[in-house]
Image (tube, rainbow, N blue to C red; front, side, top):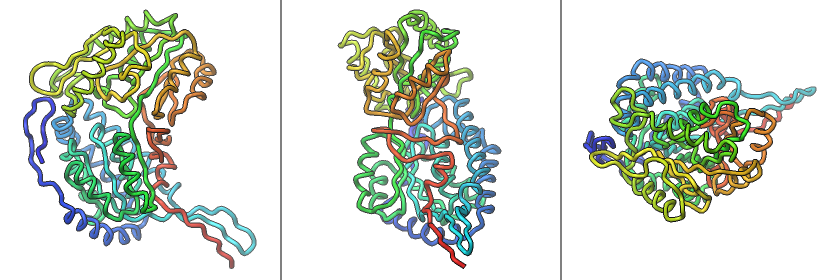
Length: 454
């Protein structure tokens, strides 16, 4: 399997893909290691994950360089991702004892009722390429803390990073037979579904998630799916600083080249501030530097997947054919690498692909609305339900709007952010199950009820 630098097109590594036989061998080894890992004290498991975080910090420059070389994001954004992962590990390790220890519920005379949180066993984590550290730690860190063994299938677009994660986890004290990395593309992912894991956790597209869910349903084991989104954002007419809101929401739409699960993918703006907002938004995007991800000051670099260029071109063509205007960009860039111009499309409707299908690129549609009711209707007009955002000077107004949106996460005067203290979950085609928070820690456990009578 070739690892290709998306900014240059150069082959930077060649790796041997795993076979069904090698994956089954890994699974057997993980089964053998899991029981011993679960018998370790929770304190020892916590210390190992804390040491992993320290190693991420000590090696941040080479790790960021590897990440940038295979996914194409600017070097500073790679550093940001690793630091963000360390922040999540900090919350998870600091709260693991509270949420994974036995919980006493009732103590009557001669009777003790308690809950014990046992590990699932050996879990399969089929992970994503857009944020391999952030998406990865959402799953394998709480899974390991809870006493599970993990087979981590990194994306074929982030395999070198997956191998670095494995190396540092083992250096931190996680045994060889408790964490293993599967190398390969979709054939390897499909082979993993034939192996009797005790849980499957996937981050990626709706179509692949649906395939995984249907394939393993007969095993009757936990499945967690973090899938796509078409995340809407509404700018109300009472915002105090339109230019500041435009800058913040542009970043929410274009950070990591728009390749974020919770990127702003659709924007609705009240007609009273629409023109001012649009002007400020376009000026903000025009101010960014696009170029090689290793250059200082670059905000927009290469798309990770070459195939996405055609998706974006198709969304632009569809929008133009249906009456939209291209306020900025609209084309892939000629030359080496997977570069697409930052693109702003106006006069859009929810019948256009750019407002219906996940873009996962540096492209945004901005629509004008008459009032809050129209905004709510358009925001909910989607098969997805990951996040929704409202910018307004009124908390009560924003909360009223957000209460009527069908999404797993709601933002007021912010967007495109994730907190380890809060559950990360989707609705409808955005998936189900939760990572992060106490919910995410316990997602990798089987609760057992104890009725103990003296």
